[in-house]
Image (cartoon, rainbow, N blue to C red; front, side, top):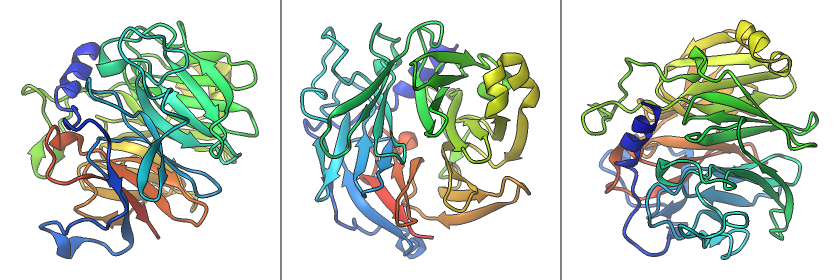
Length: 363
C-alpha cells in the first residue's frame, strides 16, 4: 500500500518536456485573482521545472532542489544566481543517469537546507520516481555554500531506512550535532549523530508518522486524487525548536501536528511514543518551519496560505493567503527576517497554468 501511494503520486508529478530548467527574477504575469495577491509576498524566481526544497544561508545565498519524479530532470540542486539556477556544486554532481555510479551524483534530491552554521545540506532520497531505494544512493551531504566544497557526508542504509523509504525533510541542531529527518515513504523519523554518522530509525509505523486513512485533500475546491484515489503520504514536514528541545512533525495527508521532546527520542521508541503530543489540527501541510517569531510556520495546502501556530496556546494565525501559493512546499528563513517558500503545484501537474515560483514573504 505504501508503494502504491507513491506510485499514485508519481503519476501526477512529471516535469515539463523542456531539456533545461529555467528561472527568472521577473515578478510574473498577473493571475486571474490578481486583486487577491498580497504585496508582502514577492516573486524571487520562476521556473518551468518542478522544485520542492529551498535554503537560504546566512550570507543570503539561495538554493533550490528539483525532485526526480520523472525521467527528465537535468538539474537536481541549483544555486540561484542573478535570478537563474546554476547546478550545485557543479554539473558533474547533477549528471546522474540510471545505472551509473551514485556516490558522487544526485540521484533523487528532495530537500536542501542551510544549518545556520555556514553549511548547506542536500538530502538525496536515493529513490528516483519512487521506484525503490538504490543501494548507496541515500545520503545527506554538507557543502560550503560559496565554494561548493564537500564538508560532511552521511550515508543511509538499513535498518535506518527501508527499501521503500523516501527521506523527505531534515532539520539540524548544530550545538547538539544532531539531524532529524522524516521518512514519508514508510512513515518514521530518523535521527542522525553528525559526529559519528550513526542513524537511528524511530516511530516506524507509529500512528503519528502514518497518513490518516480517510483523509482526502481538497485544493482549489477539488479533491486531490490519483487514478480516482486519494494518495497517502506519511511523515513529511518537520520543524525543530532547538532551544526548547522539541521536534514538530506532520504527515502530508494528515491534519494533526505532533511534537515530541528530543530527549525522549534519545531514549528510544518506547519513551518517544509515550511523550508525543498533538499540538493542533491545522489541516494538511507540506512544509514546517520553527520561525523567527518562535512559532511553528505551516504551509497550508488546502488554503493556499502560510500559517503560524503558537506552541503554547495552540492558536493559529493566517499570515498570508495568496493565489500564487499553489501547493506551498518548503520554507526557509532568511537573515533579514523574511521567509522563502517554493510552490510545487503537485495538484496541478503535469501542466500547471503558472510557472513554479519561489516566493519571499516579509512579515
